Image 1 (cartoon, rainbow, N blue to C red):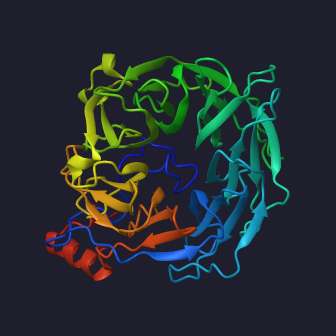
Image 2: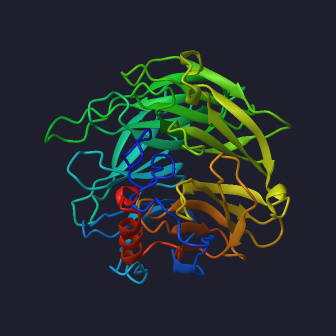
Length: 438
């Protein structure tokens, strides 16, 4: 198993878990990306966010999704990898949800559901809503609500636009961090808003008020956690759609203090609105990828791979990669992305969901030759607008799941390249080494 320099809380969330997993190793002969046609499940409304996790403790990945109407729906895995969309669990949370994630917030061993939204205008803090899991996939209703994000100063409504979860203060509990922006203030300043988890042992869920750390830019739009300076503390990075930059908060270990550095993206106007982390060039250090509103993505390689202390937490921008250069329609918009070793060659590939420009979109997988500079992609699920993408099982088969903005559905694409047990053991015994599959 590759050393984990990323958050392991909030299992299977787009911004926190990127592992090579138990099946990485010798690729199958003549391996190419191969996925079955999409299996689609009806959600009833436009799906804004996905949160896959084993909610009922049966060992199978279930699916929670937040809908545009402010409700949360849970589809349970039948045990064969398919989902029952005929009898979903539906919970009403609140309209205008801004972010949605699964994590064990109360420390009882099962995944809870967390959502954020803006507070009341003109005075009000951002709200964290929590649906606590009873262990069987049944959640508390109404949701617990915590007025913890932002300020309560008139006309300064801090709006959480994205959320991640990680143990930021090193106490073993998952904490929350949001990319937040004062949308109604001139310049729309952005912040890292850190909410520490102060839940006592066997006590009720307790969240501290946020500490808002200036990210030195305008309109923070996305956030991800990772140990970017390799000091064993989880750091944070945000994408700043307002001024074509990223900001990195290097945590000093307490979760609420440390330096912040800003880096402008190269090239023409980018407007990065989504960010993910993973080791894409094989040096064991966490790199970053942004999706940009101007039809491109940007890879930022972690310079700490050179083991120079002065480079800790800094990144080398590899330039914007227009989607048109990847064999895709030039004006399609990349909306969601996740990383996974989809061809089982030991390198993290890039899956990107595209919304079509006046036509159908697609879900595209870009191969990684090991350098982190991705090759021309292969399109799957053509004809759907994929707006949110996740690797369903990053430590196993590496299937893909995505929302479909055109049909109010969630689609699952099964990876057909997953090695069988027979292939794993045959490969291991022939080489005399099974460690590659551990």
